[in-house]
Length: 194
Image 1 (cartoon, rainbow, N blue to C red):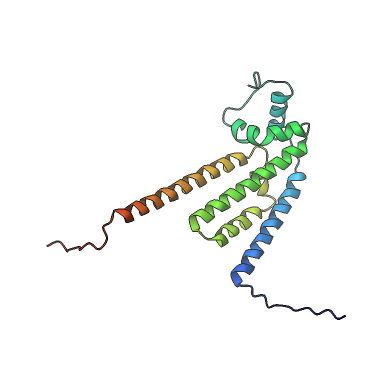
Image 2 (cartoon, one colour):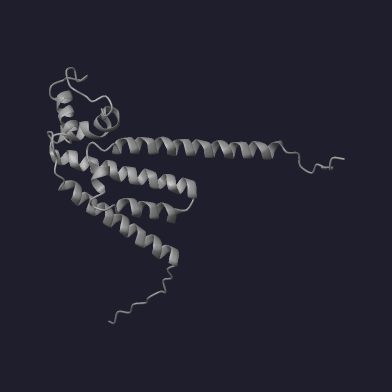
């Protein structure tokens, strides 16, 4: 019995090929950033969130009484509580968990900011291009966004807030357009002012 393969012509547009290439660049960039995060060296300034998580969970010091927190960079509500506390407890305060969660924060930041670009431009290629550029930061520039003390969680929360504001603004504009169309009389005669 002879096998016959019938190949159908697959037509790929330039736009689809470009989008696929951008997705590959995004995946490559995120993979390299994951490797950089896992191999990142930590110092005493960078492990503060891990120590705070240990203080809160292991020692039941929920309000961090007697703990020095710099007033300008506490990271409690943007980094420690939403991103670091649970993974640190589950991994028995592993430094690897600290590194991986900062990578997750970076990835979420890229994703939410790309979504904002999409909301504004209404063009998926623009959002993919932004994500590809953001995910492929240079190895020297990546630590600025990925260190545990880099405010990546703040970027995520500000991005979510901005996305919600844009969404509600768009919905409000659609509602006003609909009300304006319903208000305008149909088949009315408009005479020029004399």
